[in-house]
Image (cartoon, rainbow, N blue to C red; front, side, top):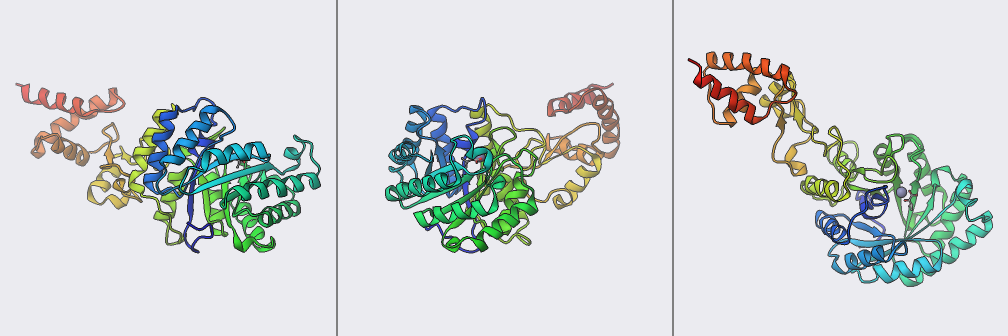
Length: 390
Ligand code: KIV
Ligand code: ZN
């Protein structure tokens, strides 16, 4: 795979195992990481960021093993801007068929203050570390952390240095979820226009969800020329999380008319991997989460259920099968109507005449007023009461 992609192809870079795992409490075991990496590879993720090899021996072992087992995906490891981190990262990813080193440094005024480097000293550090990484590996990604709060001229300067030193992907992180869609697009468009050598590398977008705009910001960046989206399954990640892979991929699929970009993701594998990541990370998916939430394909109101039974497109913009769900869930509750009750009972094996349905419907509504959700067993009990009525 070359780093410079087709004009309409968007690379999916999944960082569930690195940025996602950094969420407090989301730690995964070695075997769980291997399982998730295999699922990501199988679903068509272009680049898997498998971990931060210098962080611990466990992370190093997981990245090495994932690299050895990789099939189609590029396997990437994270490294800070020093030779020791980069060497350790290379030691772990070099086993992959397609390895990548991802090195980064915080370039905004707040982040520059931490290592206490002047702008010139930091520029030299970037030159030296990217050159070092490129001498080890021909696939190098470089990130100016907190790019969206870095002075524009300095950002251009350091990106140019990284490109000249051999970076093949330039990632623009919105580390604290501070940007907004128009600004995200403008930044990418300006960088591509202004930085010498920009046309020879892939620009990536890496957004966080602190203001709930991670997906919108990532898609805006794609529209402006970014061709790699960094994301995680279920939007797992520090604080409010990262851009959710399933949201970006399904948005590009459903609204391909206005966002004509393709990914390699087999969307039918989304639901399974979402459930596995929720289980192994211990982070349950909120019920109304876009695409993978329990309610994303569930309908309770009578009007919606009636519409769905006549034509699913009335209230659904994607088919549940597209993400690997077997069917839409018509939830039975107090807002449900007769049509949904008749359909549900038919599924359970009860074909009712109109007068029978009328009677069951009255008792169903009474039960639904007492109980939040009516399960199949409740309906079966209701039907057995009907048949035992004198
Ligand atoms: O959010 C961020 O800035 C990061 C970098 C390490 C790319 O995760
Ligand atoms: Zn991040």
